[in-house]
Length: 233
Image (cartoon, rainbow, N blue to C red; front, side):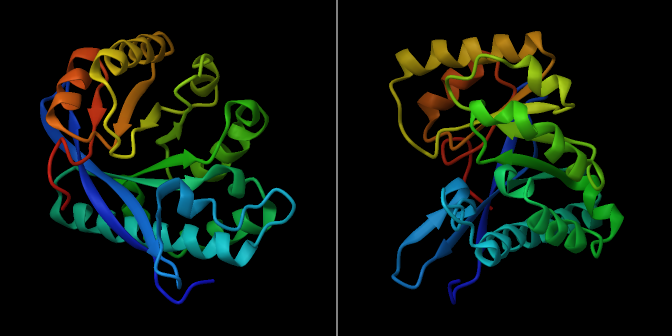
């Protein structure tokens, strides 16, 4: 475990359908003792080695992220602005009973109204493993929050499974990486079309610039955030 706490940046989420900002994406990050900064899925996967799991580290990073997100969500509730906070959570970890127990116990201490402004985003899930436990994760999350999303691979083909497990949306993350728009645009259009067929919304995190933002708008993807959408708040 590190001596530095989990921090978070909150990127405003823009709704291309309503043409307005509707919430925030909670991007967790942490500075390790060696000075290296890890964030998002990389942070949430720390301690989840193939051969062993450092439960204390996984829980520390997970709950550190959730605390930051809940604080932002409470602020939205108090302001009465109707905005939501998307909080990433390690789905592969949440399947483990000891971690799910810690997560559940913590969430039970949080005022119920906070969850009105929360969307949990299940991360650290591969397509190969998704079908085996996404429904288990949904059961844990549904105790507190009726709306949840799942981060998918760019190569994901089966979108109907997420809808079957009652996920409201799927998510892709660019991580602020600039990709050729002529290749990215058609891919995003395919994602949007497949998700729409399964009645799923799509979020795109980490839009790096205005050129990519324009490609997202043309693709039909509804929600986006990142440096190219607006400055973090």
